[in-house]
Image 1 (tube, rainbow, N blue to C red):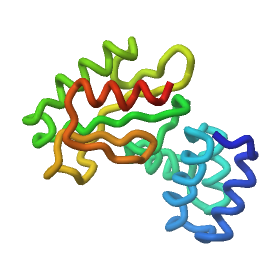
Image 2: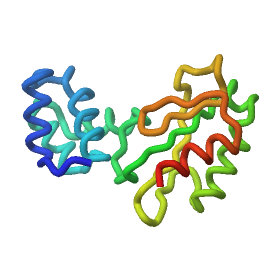
Image 3: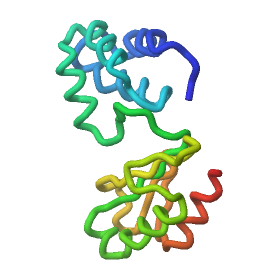
Image 4: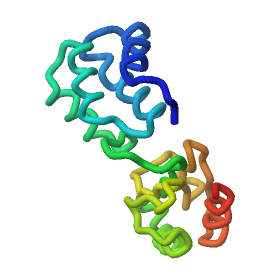
Length: 154
């Protein structure tokens, strides 16, 4: 996570994408990627910068599962929960990850290092079950291989 001020990230995004409704999602993504989440204050600043309502920015931020409005861990593990991954055992993988990390899906480890989430399709249906770890895809997982990958983050 960056130590840069949110105002700087927003201004840089506005310079790249513009100061209008079409820029909202891109600026939200930049803030989320750099800071790990998008705060209420950041959403208000994006609304002002892009000349849209705060409610509009919040609706975009809360619609997309890859944008978070609450802080997450330094590492983000997203396990696919679509039908193809489910048919190949993603429920067992999730149970193994939850047990290994000591948290449930949607939670962050007490040390703030890892957040475990489930998500809809990540585009690896032909290689299921799959997960993203800090935006790096991993496929054809077993409970053992998934836990081994995540243990490597510690």
